[in-house]
Length: 95
Image (cartoon, rainbow, N blue to C red; front, side, top):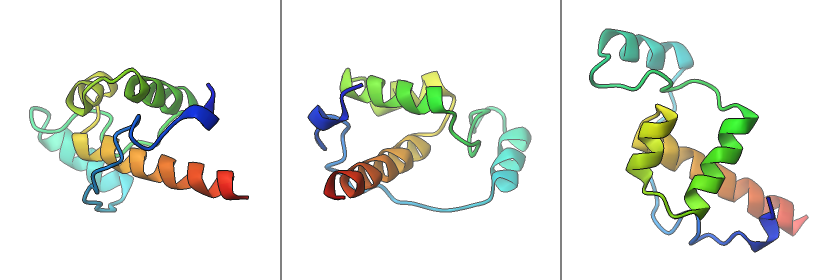
């Protein structure tokens, strides 16, 4: 993946998503107790391949809702990762 050509707009970071940090166990309890409300991977750590697929999905222009459904995560989880990824990308580019 060519990170030099990735722009903030390509991965939809013009919005400022609300972030809430909670422990993995809290998320898993919520998902287990409310399986129709929360996706099964909510709050789980992101694998390297999932991170790569997420960035590719964003660059392809998929909607956040579709990406969240495909990754079994919440829209908030996708937005939170986008923001962290972009921040890390900028930091690496400036070093």
